[in-house]
Image (cartoon, rainbow, N blue to C red; front, side, top):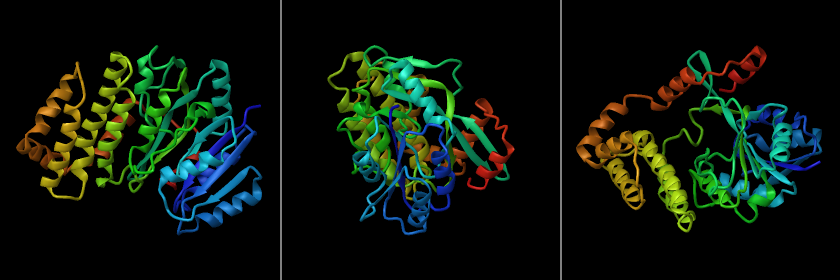
Amino acid sequence: MAKVSVVIPIYNASKYLSLCLDSIVSQTYKKLEIILVDDKSTDNSLVLLKEYKEKCRKIKIIRLKENGGVSHARNAGIEKATGDYIFFIDSDDFVDKNCIKKLVEASIKYDADVIDTERLYWYRRGAKLLTFTERKKLKRDLILGNMNDDSRCISMPRYVTGKLYKRSVIGDIRFDENVRCYEDALFNHQIKTNINKYVYLKDTFYNYLQRPYSLINTISTNHMDYLYVGKKINDIYKKESDRVKQVSNNVILDDIIAIIALKIPKMLITNLSKYEHVSEYLKLIDSLSIKKMKLKTRIAISIFKKRKRYYRYLSLVQKINLVDRSFVFLNMVNPYKIKDEKLKKKVGAFC
């Protein structure tokens, strides 16, 4: 039986830890090592970790001497991992009890380097709890070859959480510790050059809690890190075929448009500073070799290139909670009904 190393970076997560850790220690797949990396938490997290360790022999605790961020914490976990596979989960998310068992079975069945699944979003909107997926659920498993055989492999979701990686495909690749946002995007693109087969399962195992003050939903200038990440991703594929480069460039382009349209408007800086950030991203777009561009993307760029037009755009979107609107839309088009009322009540308390 293959061994799976579960790596969980933790920083001041005591409010949510029990939901996450209970879901991991109760996995039906038994050959696990659970690596809990405490990134110098200042709350009660370490006390809770030690309580779980007393009950579960599979748990290893790494206590970092300084707060180094999620990339540093994940890297510390990778270094200590001894499993054939590595599975990442964030401390405020949770997984179904059969998650790792099903992922390992799929990896063996398809001889895949990476097994991915759709994630289930939980989002509280007032008194209502919304549950939905980011994409429509597949009717069958999606089996992709390497990026040259099937370039769709390049555009698969950036998240590292919820994926099962063969340890061999990670090799010496580590998270870039200079990056505060989009570190998982860079890591996954580095991994994709080593992948022979990538499988996206039709099932949903990973539960992603959307909290308003999580790092990804806190709109700060950290989102400018993608200037560095986008250039790095572009460098990864420079020596590949034109088809691969085109797909990777379009992935970068889509990410940049989302940042300009959704993230920069919510930054707590002046409009002039926002437009200066937009201009930096437009320069990155100009450095890409995009042969075909979607009409809506061309329209967006034409708006963003003119300062007055972008200011008008800002005046519209600054009054709107775009994240909330996007989640409401996803809940409409990709709803996911939770039949377990006890689970809904339990998870609802954490959202």
